[in-house]
Image (tube, rainbow, N blue to C red):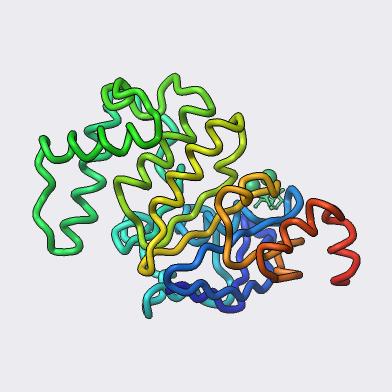
Length: 249
Ligand code: ADP
Ligand code: MG
Ligand code: MG
């Protein structure tokens, strides 16, 4: 599904990603862990195609096609979802309006008819119930005045509605208490399917108790220094990053 090959990327002329190789097969969940500043968020932005992130070497192949020449919106239509790739707040635009147009853009690309307003509302309400979100969210302006925890839930709600083939979640656990974390994890787990994959970026192991990854990668200074199974996350929790980085050096 996703094949990242020798990926080098710069921000403001500074090389942040320094040769990343990573393959995610359909149906797999990969966790990306690593200390602050190791390049985790940069990797997610480069995958989504955010402005200002320049790929200087290597390639990103998604379902047999290079993403490098695609705009962020085109990548989204292909099924790559990055939480927060959209403006953080959109005053005056209701969550429902925004989300329905996003859902329909993806449907159009797949050759499907628009989801009508009634079906959208019914589907949205069912997903919100699952995530224990208040229906009032639908009428509020996108992310405006949302608390940190509400934004995170909204992010998983958007993902549940868009049903992306590759979901990239960057620090979805930050700002969530344990109950909210479990609900959010259930939302992610509900999307698990043989056709869908996810990249879960997290600094801490805690989220991975609930979203159990197939593969764990440790990123340090823009390179993957270690790859393992879910037990690698526990090892990191016990030993800390310093030892793993020293072992890899
Ligand atoms: P992480 O998400 O793992 O904490 P980031 O991807 O946010 O790491 O950052 C990786 C490195 O890139 C850091 O050293 C950070 O200072 C640098 N960096 C990130 N964004 C910019 C930017 N816009 N300009 C210059 N350096 C940046
Ligand atoms: Mg950071
Ligand atoms: Mg980050």
